[in-house]
Amino acid sequence: MSEEISLMKGNEAIAHAAIRYGVDGYFGYPITPQSEIIETLMEAAPWETTGMIVLQAESEVAAINMVYGGAASGKAVMTTSSSPGISLKQEGISYLAGTELPALIVNVQRGGPGLGTIQPSQSDYFQTVKGGGHGDYRLITLAPNSVQEMADFVELGFKLAFKYRNPAMILTDGAIGQMMEKVKLPEFRPRRTEQEIREQCPWAALGKTPDRKPNIHTSLELDPVIMEKNNERFQAKYREIEKNEVRYEKIQCEDAEYLFVAFGSAARICLKTIEMAREEGIKVGLLRPITLWPFPSEIIGQYADKVKGMLVVELNAGQMVEDVRLAVNGKVKVEHYGRLGGIVPTPDAVLGAFKEKVIE
Amino acid sequence: MTHEIVISGFGGQGVLSMGKILAYSGIMEGKEVSWFPSYGPEQRGGTANVTVILSDKPISSPIVDKYDIAVVLNQPSLEKFEEKVKPGGSIIYDGYGIHNPPKRKDINVYKIDAMDEAVKMNNDKVFNMIVLGGLLKVAPVAQLENVMEGLKKSLPERYHNLLPMNKEAILRGMEIIRQENKAEINEN
Image (tube, rainbow over all chains, first blue to last red; front, side):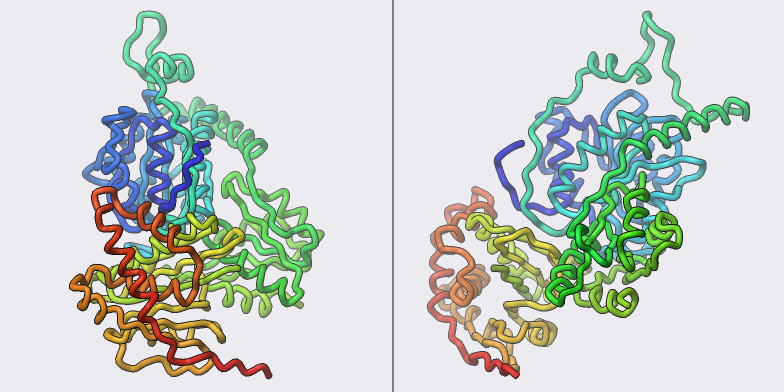
């Protein structure tokens, strides 16, 4: 790790981390609250140093299809946007999943539905972990709660995407994107050479070679018997990811009588609420899912036997709470607290809701 | 020790960059910091604010609803944040931007005539640095040398020739800030 500590926005951290990770191509289209990503990349001009391409496409749809093309050739490629723009990208994401191609997509969420607002929200949880695009596919989903994790999850996202040949998403929001914190950026890592791509990604479409059959990527398969086989292969891969890649953080859970479950910016707010609650003698902890898919169902299920109640805090009307309820399977009371449309709840308000809804 | 500070004024007054310099100063001081802006469809003349938290331990929520210190530079900002200062906390206001001063008796009230001073210095661009000086006098969260390091970090190199002028403005702010009310804490 580089020793240099910088103060920067979450959006800027993603841009710098992408250059340092050795990303081959970024394709995007500006939208608040994530435009600093493409702005930072343009200012850094990595095409002059690492050779990374940075391109402002004509639309979000064009950008995700450029990602599709780059991914097919084994390149490390990414796109970023915010909620309405991510909706436009869903077709491309489904195609990436259906073709088993790795790519990183970042959603710096804002309040919806529709064009909505530009303030922070977590209302794209369902879209991200339950589908979004069409077909039986899954999107590896990472939820950073700090500027440091914004930087770190670029590498993690690409590693998982390439390991499983599946698109990965960093699901964050305007609060984490816009705020500045201390960050240690990762070390520079050179972009992979053509030869390395050839060796590491035997599936990559790299043009005609005399020594092997051409690689052809398509999600189209008109024979349903083969299409079912393809789907079974995807499903087997998803089970593998669920087995290996669940990530979460436990905070003050050892003696907890109650549990908050929250991700991203909502988890940060809960940390403050925990400080306040513990000053009053209420023993509450936080379980923070880091991967939203695969979801940490097992550990949440284990806490169902240990705590008296759970409060799921989200910047939405109640989305992840459904997965928490499935995980505890009725064994313990699970309540939800959220604010909508870009309003961020305060630690005080969370404490109030917790006392009202959960404490006996 | 944790300081939860909000700085609020109108867009273009340098509120966000003042917050950034404060946050950088905190880093130089070895503290944990967070900087959370009101970002929105803001425009020059509209309101802008930033929450800066400096702490000796990791910062939980970058978003808070009660502040130790509110620095308010125009009337709408005072109206928004006066009630959000913790009892015993402090409010710092600019005499030029605010005509109806804070009324609460349970907080410390400081007045700084930063705009007038900037005009006297013949440079309205150092306005926010004068205010920062006042803030550092009230809450010495960072030593001057660390503030200067923070300033250096947050200014592009081509502006480093302006560092002495900014230092002078910070020192001036420390001199001219005046306490108008001492918090009366009711211990009941």
